[in-house]
Image 1 (cartoon, one colour):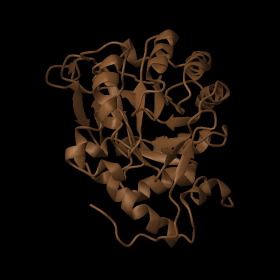
Image 2 (cartoon, rainbow, N blue to C red):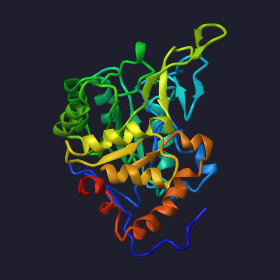
Image 3 (tube, rainbow, N blue to C red):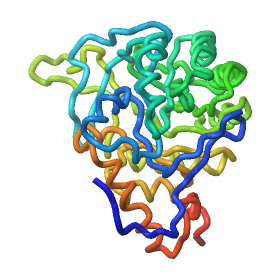
Image 4 (cartoon, one colour):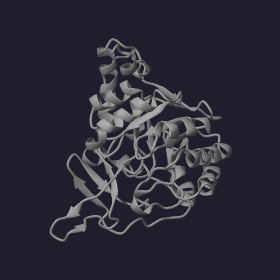
Length: 319
């Protein structure tokens, strides 16, 4: 799948990493979200992954995890609930088995890391720093289907800042911090991780939800709750990007139910510098590449010359 008639004078490159030793320049702002694209290797057989702006790996932990018992996924209207529980091979296997493959790719791979303590995040950041094939880190301080009741490790500004600072001290890679929408004051958390050295903020992770089997009167998911994703959460995600973009100076990566180019434009206009496609990859793996193809024309059609001109456009419009 490729585009031959995209406007040649439209600049779709974006950059992250003002605090990093190795800033990350993406050929376009279209990324794929953690937990929806495996390690990237699986989808390389289905689409031309090299045309993406970046790939974000599934969440990696210090030790391998089997994840939660099933059922772990259930559909909902305009979305899905998942409670995978961070099933992964562990950071050491990622370094030995996955990173050498990534190092051969043109598309940068950002490793999503998740931990239960500040020390675990710092430990993984230290191990991954300088590993060929690892272009950046995304701190998953907001996964709602590991802790009981949907709690997240970064549910307050102080803890979020501690994790970010510890990682910043251990790595020269660009650091993105993925925040939960279900905190008391998301702008406070965003400012805290910015002050602690984050290069960008990913907004948003899933909302906690559940389904009940009305025949058995029991939760459908074995974990009881799961993370709600898909188009159902998009309006809320756009609002949070719009809100946080006015509270911080670092770039925002917008995600949450993006299914088409129009959805991507909403996030960019709300203040995002880049976007991530998540749940729609399960339905149509080429969704992200379709956005890559259509974005330059959508920018040119609005009389603009670069994707940066779209960022925060809604904030600059008269009331």
